Image 1 (tube, one colour):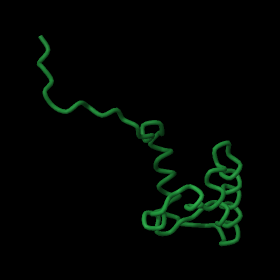
Image 2 (image 1 turned 180 degrees about the vertical axis):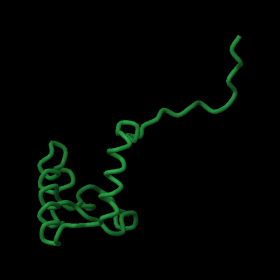
Image 3 (image 1 turned 90 degrees about the vertical axis):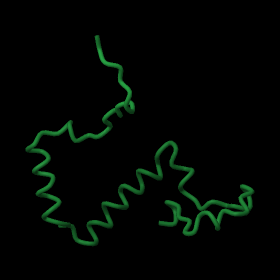
Image 4 (image 1 turned 45 degrees about the vertical axis):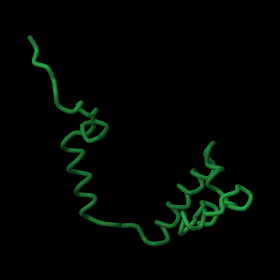
Length: 90
């Protein structure tokens, strides 16, 4: 006979850590410890590549331009969103 479980329901593991070998994790930690090895210009170039991919995504259009709170009827938008940002402004 199995004892009745009375505690909280176990959570499903959603981490990726178990997908990697110890060697892969150690290599990743070493790379983090070495720090940033890209020049500011190279880093900017890489970030712009990612930005273009995000802007071109099927659902990316919603993030490409600033929100128009008047058009959308959001009178408290700037009270809720203190520092609005969109991908086109970046």
